[in-house]
Length: 126
Image (cartoon, rainbow, N blue to C red; front, side, top):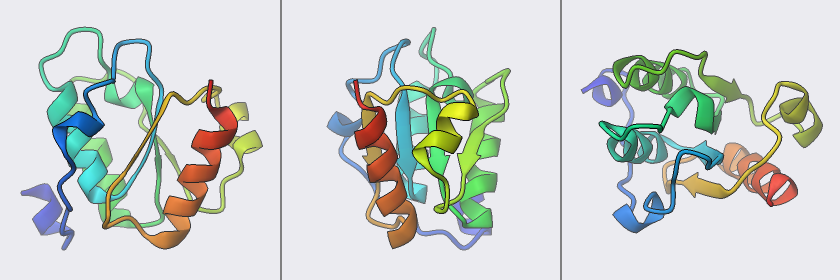
């Protein structure tokens, strides 16, 4: 519902995309479909925290709002981590996101955000 309010058209992802996420996982994400898939996966699972575990790469206000609302609804006590497509791996590390185990990108992600997310995930990959 929130996605529709912001005029977003989240592209669904297979459940297998988010299955590997565990409490220690760190995820780089981009796209409204990625946000909704992550929110569905983390909902009701003890030890999983959207704001703590996920770094969102986007310049779209609707995606930022969707991510923040999802974090709040899921009970994440932390501040959601959101960076623009101009972010660098160094700036992300300085902000406290130092490792990436998984990239979750949906087809609706903006091209620049997808490219940045792929770079950050690759460079921070364990």
